[in-house]
Amino acid sequence: MAPVTSLAGKRVLLIITGGIAAYKALELIRLLRQSDCAVRAVITAAGMKFVTPLSVQALCEDRVYTDMFSLTDESEMGHIQLSRSADLIVVVPASADIVAKMAAGIADDLATTLLLATDKPVLVAPAMNVRMWQHPSTVSNMDTIIRRGIIGVPPDEGPMACGEFGPGRLAAPERILGAIDRILKAGQDLVGRRAIVTSGPTHETIDPVRYLANRSSGRQGHAIAAALAAHGAKVTLISGPVSLADPQGVTTTHVESAEEMRDAVQAALPADVAVFCAAVADWRVKPSKTKIKKSAVSPTLTFIENPDILLEVAHAEKNRPNLVIGFAAETELLAEHAAAKRVRKGCDWLLANDVAPGSDTMGGSENEILLLTEEGSEMWPRTTKEAIAERLVERIVRFFIRRACS
Ligand code: C5P
Image (cartoon, rainbow, N blue to C red; front, top):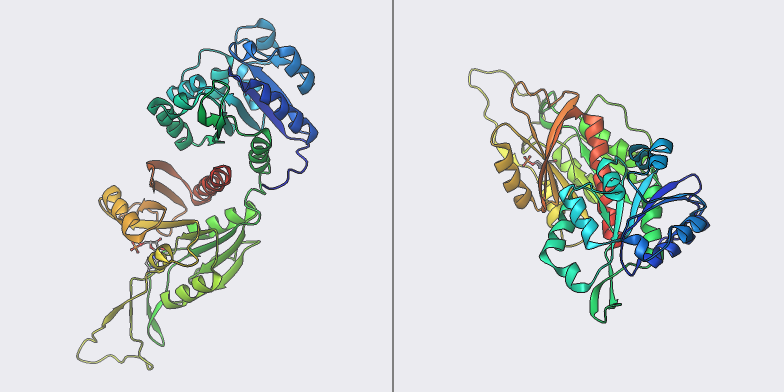
């Protein structure tokens, strides 16, 4: 686990729910305060049966919030403000009850209202009896909240307070602190990760003056490379011919053809994540060394299939990145074609977009995405390609946090 450095200037809102592990939240507060992180706490009614507001307050060096309808709390700081005043909301321990309420969107006390109202990242460290943890309801509730972007620190396995054995014990406070550290180091959350991004079209030479190409501008791929670099990743961008500047902080390799792009991708491996955004020409022709002359008979071009770079990398036995992401530009039956493509290409995630005439996606400044993962699909409404890139990168960050926590 990466050592925790200073969290000075960072603010955590800690929600303590009911459970025998609630006392470990005190140890987490101590560790956070040691890292200079400000901690404000909310304790649920059940949580107060296990720890007292006084002990939590003493460790936080801040007042503790318990009651949704306390006039003092609402006049001093409403629940919206309370959730917005933090960089991260942390639920430790998270009972089966609060996980179920989060999944269902129930807001019947201060803690659940905060969780429904917040726009901040949320980390949940569940702790409960092994049977409760393994109950299909809890499994499905955890699955729901994780899919919505909540970060889970799974419980440990071991003997439990109830005398049973199995998963359900709260993760060690040091492990929770490590996850908090990774989330709060915004802009640094991909430090140490290597990324490869392909972008733009490819040009396939016909003769010394002519080539086959497509309308890709490279804007989406370049925006993704820039966003990955802004989060601290070491990025190699492999770009076909575009009229865009090389993004700052990114190593850019310029290529023309699909074969050159394939060689550049192979040379850039290994990587933790690879995003294949380029509109690679599916075919090339055997180039003529001299300019093809106009004649009475129209020339015939014989197409040769290009290497499928994404497919090769996704199926590679050696050096396969942990996360392989493809794009699919479709003009019809977007969802069906994209789902089939994700499976055929062997990529983990596929971002499909509609490039039908009039959509203005190919070459334009905006994009609308259907994201397919093995967990399901979701729509990302039309927005700028930069905003899509940031959303994708946040998703990539969460992927690596979840991997590191599990
Ligand atoms: O098969 P199709 O071109 O629709 O697949 C699109 C996805 O595959 C994109 O992620 C694209 O970058 C990638 N691709 C590739 N090499 C090819 C063709 C497509 O990497 N030859």
